[in-house]
Image 1 (tube, one colour):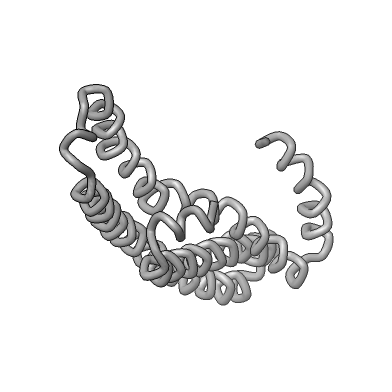
Image 2 (image 1 turned 60 degrees about the vertical axis):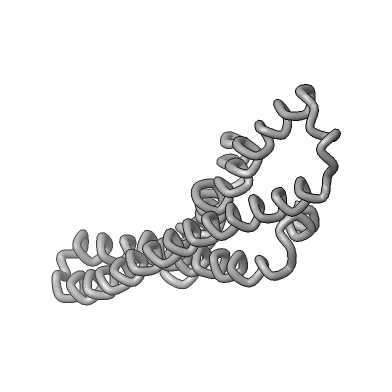
Length: 172
């Protein structure tokens, strides 16, 4: 799929796509760290150590604020990439259609062409605006939680690792 996308969009569109992907990964990692930091906060509260809970809560608040900023950046990059991709695809479609002879445009071809121009381009751009982020985040965030859990409580990390394949099968 990657090579086909590069062929359709061109290599000049790779840089914004990579920036968007990196921003999604940064957001997903920060989100995973924020989820994992709930464990020491709750552990300290359950132990009655409000001082330690406050320190962890401060770190959780900072990571959550950073995750919020990262979410904004990745969403903005996603929509920017979608809009630029839309323009690029319409431009390339127009260039290709401009090279065709008038005889090519028959009634039988106008319907599929219209569907391509309205639906097909929209489907490609939806990838960047709405579909790619949930996919990346749903993989990277849990993996981040697992890695952080190894450092916070290895038993929770082991339980997560053991149930991971079951969750994968359930969601598949």
